[in-house]
Amino acid sequence: MGKKVVLETKSMNIFERYLTLWVGLCIVGGILLGKIAPGIAQYLDGLSIMVHGAPVVSIPIAICLFFMMYPIMVKIDFEEVVKAGKSGKPVGLTLFINWAVKPFTMYAIALFFLGVLFHGLIGVNATDLVKMPFGLDLPVGAQHGAGTVVLSDGVKMLEVPLWRSYLAGCILLGIAPCTAMVMVWGYLARSNDGLTLVMVAINSLTMLVLYGVLGGFLLGVGRLPIPWQALLLSIAIYVALPLITGFLSRKWIIKTKGVIWFNEKFLHLLTPITIVALLVTLILLFSFKGKVILANPLTILWIAIPLFIQTNLIFWLGYGLARVLKLNYRNAAPAAMIGASNHFEVAIATAVMLFGLSSGAALATVVGVLIEVPVMLMLVRICLRTSHWFPQTENA
Image 1: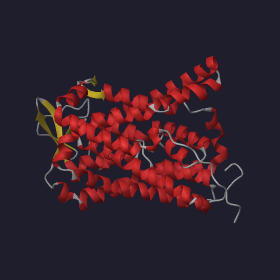
Image 2: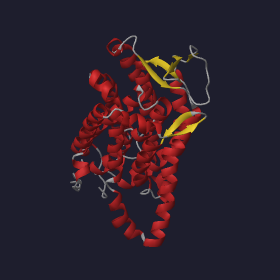
Image 3: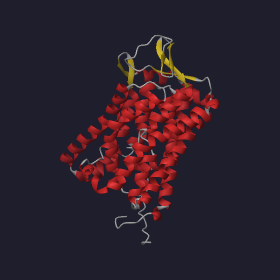
Image 4: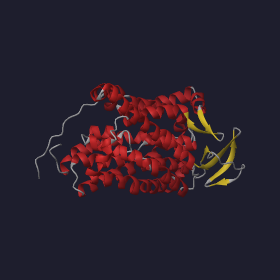
């Protein structure tokens, strides 16, 4: 055994320290807002970009999600992506867990719990109304996947089993490895920030290719509509746009103001923006789902259980493989956490875009946020307490 290294303590700002509290308060505030003024969420959801007569991009949600993503994207130094090959093991482990394992374990676990174990508790005959895929015009009464075309307030919708709508939200979480909040988790775990940035960049680029492919495949397996255009559009708007904006603005700011000003001034101003935008999004989403939650609060529990199991399974799988590969702690921690955590911003956006703000799929992705924050904080503590399981390096 080598000499044990004491990891440097890093302080947390008020957003990081009390993030679970802020999330809880926003959920409660959103529910109360939905009860007091139920028309607000419907109005905001109506502020959408229409494609072929269907609302595809909710403008308020898109604005919030952009400000969630931009502060993360602007930190990425794309020159570091070229150097990622020098850290082949952690990067390869991350890609394997994120794209060859995680989507399929999420599908299997959610299908078992929501479609079998909790099916009766959710409601055997419970249904959900979701958006029709844009470009699809079927007559009322027609079947599409597991759904039936119905007329709701003069608009054609798909009526699907409620548990399948929850399953769709879980699928969207499972195919979205974290490219944002994992920076916070890695920072708190005192891991390799540079490697985490490289992994974030690689995952962002990989999502542009695989998110739509895996999403369409697994949603199809789940007998739900496969709106390929919407999946690709969601990646373009919620990943590619902030990615390109972050790259160009980073390059321009460093050129005009210098790298010291960029790191010490500009990034400091951006620190709370991601979390504030997340909290605003939570208020919007829960203001619309407040009635559903108050009518059946156990719904949150039924969705949370498979998500909790999935998060822990993926973390321990990645953490265990990192130990087998003899990675040092500062590389093992982010390699495990980036797979365990989800890119819930994109998952929420895609669920809202594909199925609607009031759908069970959107609720499932929001429950993903509710679960992820406390669970990931728990996993951060586990990482810190087990750092001695891994080889230590001089840089640690």
